[in-house]
Image (cartoon, rainbow, N blue to C red; front, side):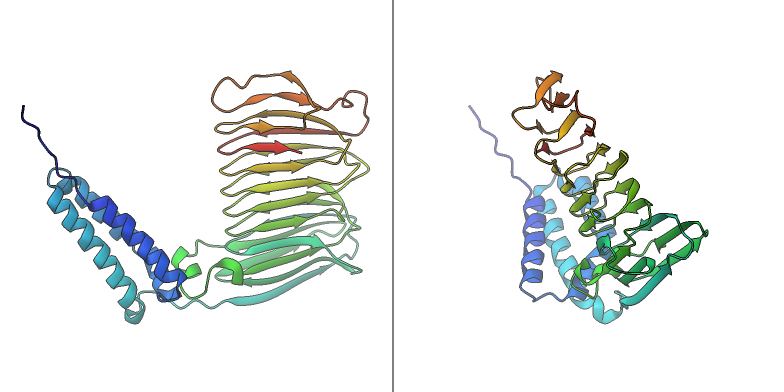
Length: 332
C-alpha cells in the first residue's frame, strides 16, 4: 500500500505568528502608536495577500508559504516606514464644553451620538444648567438646541472619521472622553448611541421619562432610577458586555436586544419581576425562586417566561423582555 503525504501550506500559521508578534511588540512599546495606526490603513493589502493565497497557495503549499512570509514582512516594513513617509495623518485631540441653562424648560429630550470616546452620563449637582458637556474628541461634533418649554438637545459626532486617525497618534480611546451632566429636576427623554469604548449611564438621580440606548463596541453600564410613574427602557446591545442595575422600588419595562457579549440585569431584592427571554447562542439564568411559566431549553440557546413569586399581586412591577444574540443573559 502506498501512502501519500500532502505538504501543508504555512500561510495561516505565518499570518497568526505575524499578528501575535505585532501585538506583542506594540504592548512592549517597541512599535509606536503611529505604526499601529498604519496597520488600520493596510487592511486592503491584507485582503490582497489572502486572495493570492486562495488563488495560488492552495495547490502549491510552498508558494503559499512564500506568500504568507512575504506578506507578513511587507506589512511589518510598511508599519515601520509608513509614518515617516507621511502615510498616517497626525490627528489633533480637541476639547470643547457645551452648556444649556434650564430657562423656561419643563421637560427635555436629549440625543447623544458618540464616536470613539469613553462616555459617562450622570446627574448635575446643584446646578442651574439643564445640560453640561465636557468633551475630548477627534474629528467634528455638532451641537444643537431648540425649543423653550420643551427643549431638544442633540450632540453628535459628525462624519466618518478614518479608524486609523483615531488610533494612529494616541494610545487608544481612553484619552477621548464625553462627560455629560443632566439636570435632575427636569423630566428627560434620553437617547444614547454609544460609540467605541466603555459607556456608563449613571441615571439613578435623574427623572427619566423614556430611555433608549444603542450599544457600540465596548462595555455598557446603565443604572436606572425609581420613578413615581412606570417608564420604558430600550437597550440594544453591540459588541461587549453590558449591565443594567435597577434602583429599589422602580416600576418599568425593559426591552433588551442582545448583541455579542454577556448581559446582566441586577434587580432589587424582593422586586416583582417577570422575565420573557430567548437567546440565540447562550443561556438564561434567573433567581432560583422564580417560577418558570413557559418555555424550554432543549434547543440551541434558551427561551421561556419566568416570574417572581410576588409578581401578580404587586403594583410595582419590573417586566423584562430579552431577545438575545451571542452570550448569556442573567437576572440576579
